[in-house]
Length: 315
Image 1 (tube, helix red, strand yellow):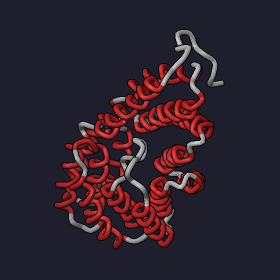
Image 2 (image 1 turned 90 degrees about the vertical axis):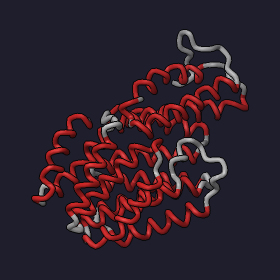
Image 3 (image 1 turned 135 degrees about the vertical axis):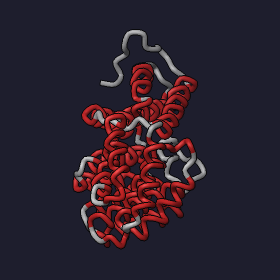
């Protein structure tokens, strides 16, 4: 189905055409990290037909897999930006196409990454069991590709799913596995779809896991979440504005769980300030737990109202 040449498609392509798709994906992924999927999903979808046209062209045999991989990653990015924009059915459609192309290319590391992203959709929409299924499938692909970095990403997200299910021992074990795999991984030539997973992201994921353990298992886990999130927030640059806003929201939740209302209000307001530059429906959804916790404290009334005011704009 992918090799039919549409009207206007190039008859032959070379390495420059493929590199152009790869460069476009890298550039648009930068916008996604900084400003959210709502800022660039239309740009991704606009460029997608041109990328897909390469699939129908005559390609040197040595480049066929690279074409499939490049277009797979464009669909992978389309799925992620649509997910971040709240368009779930469309997102899963693009992830499915991306997975088919990555499988055809034999790129198991990318297939693992796509499984991670499909799992994150399920995790975000309160289906941690389905998410774990995707993460486990992704781990199989990651190990088949000998990519410990891809495996570390999957382990981190398994930990988060376990935390949401209240399975603390398994969550902590998965975090330890994440750290071991990351430290043993080869990070000398990281593809753009995995470049976000740095030491900073390890702190952010650990903080997110401990936040949900504090919410669903034992509030004492908040004491571990706070320094991890603070480390991530201090390390994220402007290019990761969405991730920093997410971590600020989680940090504010933990401060409320620890009964430090004043700190929570200050951090929560900081999260709202940073969030104003991010176009992400996930930001709105992440604010819900903070709003729910803030409503329990009379000293957080103004923060609650500010969140309610911002929620429509975050959609």
